[in-house]
Length: 390
Image 1 (cartoon, rainbow, N blue to C red):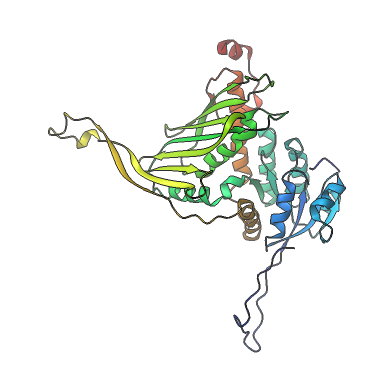
Image 2 (cartoon, rainbow, N blue to C red):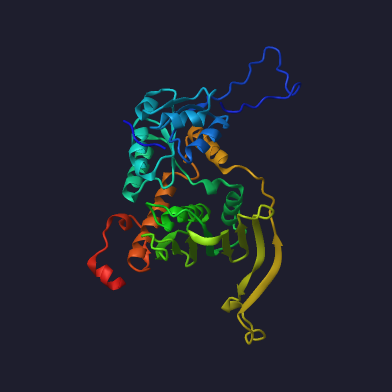
C-alpha cells in the first residue's frame, strides 16, 4: 500500500565518574524502540531530527512517495533508510512504532494499517477528518493494547506543562474563564478555514489544562470572509464549560501584527501566557474579584457591596526552554515502555475533533450553540435548523 506522505544521541559518562566493581555485572540498557517516520514534508523533518536525538528511539525508516525528498531530509551519510512503500515499513519487525506526518485525509488509512500491523502510532493533528473514524481508531488501539498518541505539540512546551500543574494543583482556584488570541498575517489555506487551521492549537491546550470534572458542553462560532477567499479567515469560537465558565478563542489570518496570548482566570489567581515574550512567557497574578458569601454578611457590612477587588503580587515562574517536539518524542517512548496512555492520547485527539466539528456546525447555523458529543460529527443540518439560523 502506498499513499502520499509528505542515531540518537547517547549519554557518555565523564572520565572517572563511574568505575565498575570488579566482577559486577554492567547495567543492561533498555532496548531502543524501532521507529519509522511517514511523511517527509513540512513536519516530517522535525520528527526525524527529534527522533534521532531521543535516546529511547532508533529511527530505521523515512517513508514518502517522493524518495528524493526523503534522501534530502536524511542527508548523505545517514544510516536511516528511505522508501516509498508503507507496506515495507510495516513488514519490518524492528519497527515497533510509526510517527505519521501526512495530510489529514490520509491519517485514518495509515493509522489503521499501522495498528492492525501491531505498531504503536504517533499522529499529527487532527487525528482524522471525522470523529467517527477517530473513535474507531481509539477503540482499535485500546483493544490491541497499543499506544495511539496525538502530537499536540504545544501541550509539551514547558509553559503549558506548568499551566497544567498550576490548574490541576488548585493554585488558581476554580476556572472562571479561558481566553486565547492566535492571530497573524498568515497563509490562507486552500482546503480548510481559519478555525481548522489555527484553533486546534488552542483547543488542544484547553483540553490538556482543564481540571478533572470540567469539560466542554457546547460550542458556538462566528466567522467572516472579508477577502472573498471562500472560507472563514477570521473567527471567534466560544466553548461553554460544565462548571458554567466560558472559553473563548480568537483566530485570524488577516492581522498585520502577531499575537499569541492566553489568559486563564481562576477564583484565586489568573495566569497570563504571552508566547512572544521569552523573558516572561508566564505570569501569575494574585488579582481578581471576590464575592462575599451571603451567610458571611453581617449587619456592619451589609450596606457595602458584596463584590470586592483583590490586588496582590505578580510573579513570573522560571521556565527551562526546551524544544516541545523533543518532549513529545520522549513521552511517546515512555508510554510505550511503561505500557500506559500518553498525556495526549487518541481520546484527547477525538475530543478536540468533536469541538472543531461543533464549531463548523455552529458556523453553518449562524453562531448557534451546538452541543458537544458523538452526534455532532454525523448528523446533517436539517432544513428546519437552517431556516431557524437565518
